[in-house]
Length: 161
Figure 1 (cartoon, rainbow, N blue to C red):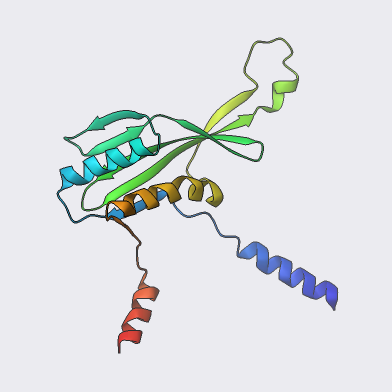
Figure 2: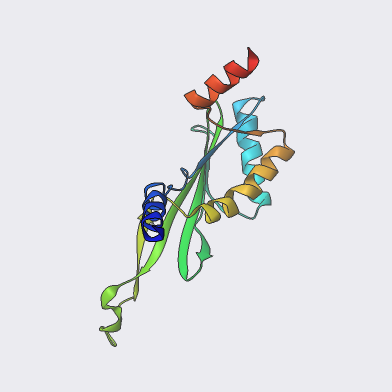
């Protein structure tokens, strides 16, 4: 009985493994597009990011790669900020992975790690990157914009009735 219950709980846990959220946050602004771009530039500088390029014509900012660690794994990430109807902040990430043949190449002069691009980061690392941004943007009156799913909008409509 206990064994059956254990296997059922284990299978439910594996079937509900969530993936981390997308590496993007959006912020609303009530000023002009160029002013929102300047605010974004100021926020990134205040948080210590080095700006790789800043284009006023396309309303885009990109930072240089910054290292971040989780346990033994090393990740590098950069931020891309695109200002349109809202401010979109994207994380561009890569992780360093040990090669399998690294212990056999003695004196080969080759690197023992390789870099892989990733389209997700662990949620704890995303929080470590996004929380300071959310706090700084809120100081300028910019609030994080969260997409409301159909289910949530139905709950809001039912609550208003």
